[in-house]
Length: 227
Image (tube, rainbow, N blue to C red; front, side):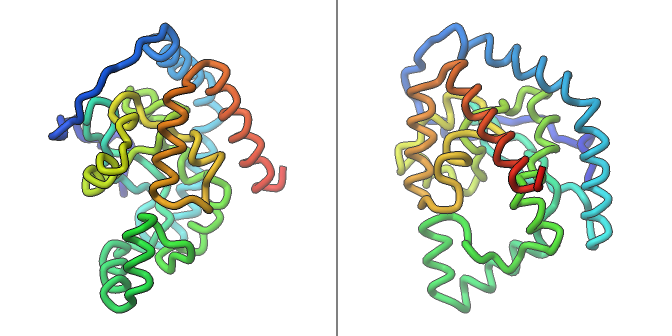
């Protein structure tokens, strides 16, 4: 069973694109302070929910938590936590799908995701539709790996794709649980569009922008869970 207490120490990921970092009081200090305060305040509510969802995933077979190496601010590699939503041999299934179906291979190459992904489990479909699979990332926020709002953390194998697409914002700030792509373009955007959403977020980064995305996230989750 995967435990959030088994997170590995972060290591540097090379190469890290160099860029001019813009300075702001919010981005360089207040944002992190608010992340920690908000995470601590929510923990008494979220812990029971996470445990309940973990049990649901376990009943579906296999480990409840899933950890994958992602690249964050300054190219730091960390273990990003999620509730498992895919079958246990998801990577092998994807490899076989791409090898047997050129259209699937092209979709994955273009979008880095599959619109009708057969690897997602029954419980996983619910967790993804409601975004509840992301809840364990609150621990990543407390550790300093992530922020509540920011670009999505990408896999180590995707680094050159993001660099080629001009996604330098991914190296300038902590990745987020929610953000521009998740709210403005989720489910309909291509990989290139995704990078554009996150770059635009970086340019507009402010307390008001983060508040907007946090409120939009709460609204979406409430709507999808029927509350």
